[in-house]
Length: 303
Image 1: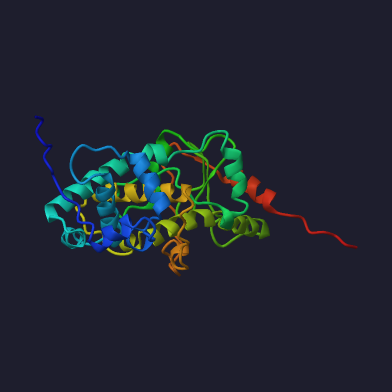
Image 2: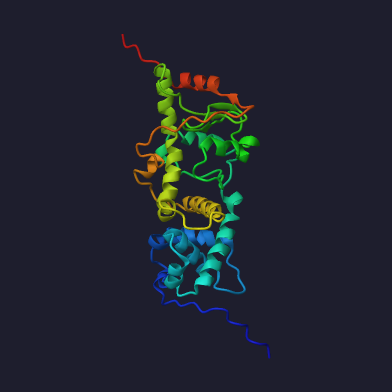
């Protein structure tokens, strides 16, 4: 007679959070920040197979609740009727699996996708704001430009391809090499051509601000207060938020950003300080001037 397999755990389906999930129809967004469609897509991507433990459904729910509430392991343990040590292990186990999806879910657009993507910047408020690259690991006091210069996208010239430019704010230098990076003209403006260009650039950059606004709205408790995790674990948490952001948008799960979040956290803050270009970089001033002239529509002469 074959021995009965050891039972590692028993799911208590009377726990309110689990009862909510197992009823098959209740909305998961208030507690887990994902719709059922997004949650099922995440499970399909992570894989549903297991041979021991609590199973992928329960473990993923535990991780999402911890991320959505940004609370202690003790509170999550009470919410799921689990040992605190188990919650700690599950959170780190699932976060590692989600983070490993980074290069599958967050990627640069292909050559076939680029023309359609570029054209959609003309209608930014109707554009779905996916992340195509992420760099984590620097502390908040590091200048944005320094992070750019230390990113693979810059020193390996990975993106964008010829004929396309990255749009940046005034904290970055205007460059054409090693990557094309277009920034606003600095104040005071010299003429109406520069003003029109800055206006067009600002409207296109709404896509960038909206992307961050959507992610901050979904994980508000994570981004709008101090992240109470070990500093070495924080980058992995941010990567997970980015991966989940793209998975949600792929499945039509969009939480529109609130007003303050659309301002990139600025909300009346002074303009960003211009970052110096590193050695070997080539100014993009000439390319920016050509773009500025292309933005100007000549006035009609009705006489």
